[in-house]
Image (cartoon, rainbow, N blue to C red):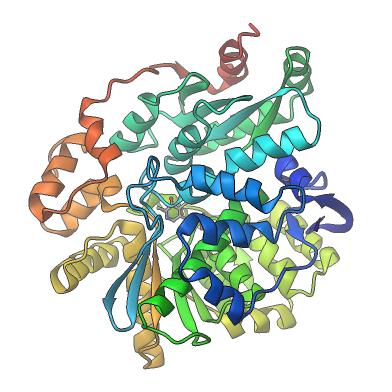
Length: 497
Ligand SMILES: *Cc1c(COP(=O)(O)O)cnc(C)c1O
């Protein structure tokens, strides 16, 4: 199967190349030239299988260079019970006849990024090998919290890789910081950057594009790569859980094979929800995708008007992993809905880069609105929703999931419909204890790690083991650097300086 760049269809690469490069040379993103299709027989054949096999069957359709047995091997490792705290991996919790939560946070870092970042290291290292590359890969990550930890866990002690993560010293929660600074593994490094997330990200991008750095690494047998969410190797594993959720609803007789369901996805960079769209494109019976945002509602406006405008106030919210004004993966959706029109996509993206704004043509907007619905909610509504869901359904959700729960309710009220919705649950409530406790009317006057015990006391819901164990965690990495020193820090980490 071939992959093309969203900004130039003449750029064609294989799956392993798409995964190794991450980004196309002209700045475009790689997408499958043709999507494989699934039918009801295929879905039926997955119903009795464990998650790793479901995921392998789906992923196998997109990668020619690896055999099914190889991919199954990756999946069995990535989604093993050593790494996930439930054999179901991505269980569906049914709250009522027509409301379900797809829990994607049972992995080692308690956020949905584990679903992809447990898999990416296998795909990336084997892709590199398949291409005859004998240098070691050095993954650099700038993180606002969840991605850094998930990438560290995914790449920890993976042969042929080194991983280094920069986080903004004052931009992550206590829990997130300790999760990263206490990271285990012999190939990992973590450093705080004096500044905000943008400073860290700009610093990493500079390192990537610095020819002198590339040369120094090359001489020592290393090359850089990234683990960010525009890499095809991160999107692909996410398609599987939409299909798996459908299987689970058939299995419990909630729906009949062929019935349509709706998913509501708390959205930031548009990776998760795009995977849902790809599942639909392959043939999964999805009626609608609801795109839920927090106060950074650039996507709500886009889906409702066709105008994408990032020139707006940036809000720091209770759902920080969705505090994003440039949703990179949206480019892939526009490519599909424009009829694979690379010229138009390039024009829009150039406009986004130069003036921070673009408007899609009527034909694209119509297609978006045929399938997508969008809404957003405030921090106050997020907390009210956590409280309501806890009190009415006795189900504890985090702030990101609560945004989706609220928007689901709004869409139901507005359309006066009670359609069957799967709310995609992206993080454990224990990752955001302060806001969740506040929502429940509890006191929050303690450090982040102490609040874990308090939330457990208040709710009697057990925290994920890796978070509960944080109270005994000892920081290994106390390094702090000015952003201008980031290249030096990386060279020291690799033993080049
Ligand atoms: C990253 C993240 C999101 C947003 O997902 P996208 O794929 O970027 O849209 C939502 N919730 C949580 C908890 C996350 O970590």
